[in-house]
Figure 1 (spheres, helix red, strand yellow):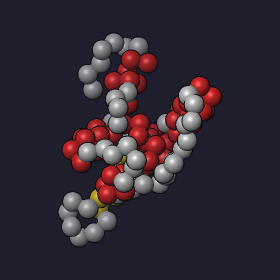
Figure 2 (spheres, rainbow, N blue to C red):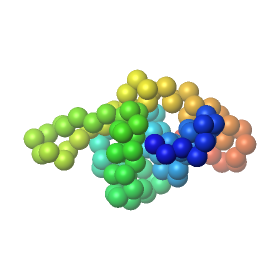
Figure 3 (spheres, helix red, strand yellow):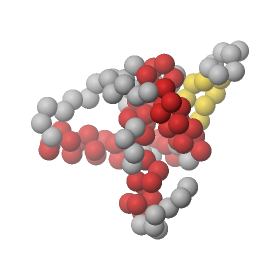
Length: 109
C-alpha cells in the first residue's frame, strides 16, 4: 500500500477512506451480506466495477477472505477476517456520531 505519510489516520484513510470501502465493510459486518449480488442491492448503488475493485482491495489488505460457493469459478462468498472484524467498533462509533450530528440518519440493510 502506498502511504502519504506514517500518520495512523493517514494510513487508515489510505486503506478505508474512499467513498465505497466502508459501505462494503458495513454490509459485511452489520448486514451479513456475503455475495456479490447482495452488495449490489445496497441502497447506495455501487457499480459492479467499483465493487470488484473494493473487494480485491479489502482481500489484499487482509480484511476479507473469499471462498467459492458453487462449481462456477467466479461465484464467491466473502467474509470478514479477524482483522476485518476489528473494524466493527470503529463503524459503530461512526454510526453513533452520525446519529447525534446528522439529521435523519438511519441504518438499513
